[in-house]
Image (cartoon, rainbow, N blue to C red; front, side):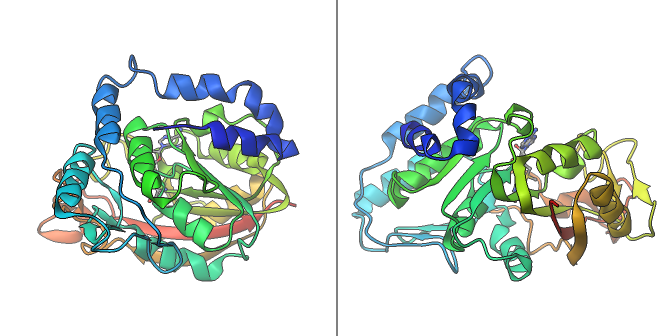
Length: 325
Ligand SMILES: C[S@@+](CC[C@H](N)C(=O)[O-])C[C@H]1O[C@@H](n2cnc3c(N)ncnc32)[C@H](O)[C@@H]1O
């Protein structure tokens, strides 16, 4: 069900990526190891339990819509919903599948609407999406014209969610999600026309190392799209929360936009520009029927919602675009 044969065949035809094939199958096997993910057999069982429903319409441009209400029988729909719910929590979306609405924690479509107007065209681009979660934006990148999209995310459950949906979208489509982190991407690949890193930088202990890794994925003249948490402030300012940030333990660096642009220049990018800054709203990130855990409302100070529960500035996210020389 999670089958990379087509991807491996496709990579044979991309000279800059062919060398990766020597290691990639072992990296995939390690990323999908049952020693690492004890619940993986359950997730595989959910994929195996999905009903076969023929799908002759998909939409990736304005939304992600798979099939139509009426394509599936009530029994098939019930089975589909049951198996997809076994892959809880659904964080990134929303997805519409045979009329079933997967109301995810995040309105990832809102992020895409903020990103898309500022991109150089993705037409015919080879795209890498680092930390793509369940691959929602990978489909939007494909809808925007990319010729092949490779998402990477070390979370095997999100990879399982991606392939649960790809089953219906068309298993031959050139969009895949690999169960690996950025560390597994060979250094100095210089292969991709556009690389996305959205919602990842603040999780990295060394933001400079992350920016260098991203630069090395791109061909000369390539495009980086970086989305991350920022603070208000001048050049040089950066918040390093000592304890948790919005209850997350793994948050390291929240720079000001001017600081982040300077980090990009120092990392060898040219023309870094901040194209969007937006506070995260309670409408964009919230608990839903498909994500039962705590969400943004639980992470903010109830008395002062412009602060996190720890007293830090509430989440504000910036989108930066930069190029490789
Ligand atoms: C906040 S989510 C962002 C998802 C998506 N890019 C978005 O913007 O909606 C961060 C993702 O990065 C992934 N991640 C964590 N460490 C990573 C690493 N070393 N390399 C690549 N992805 C990583 C996590 O599994 C998670 O799915």
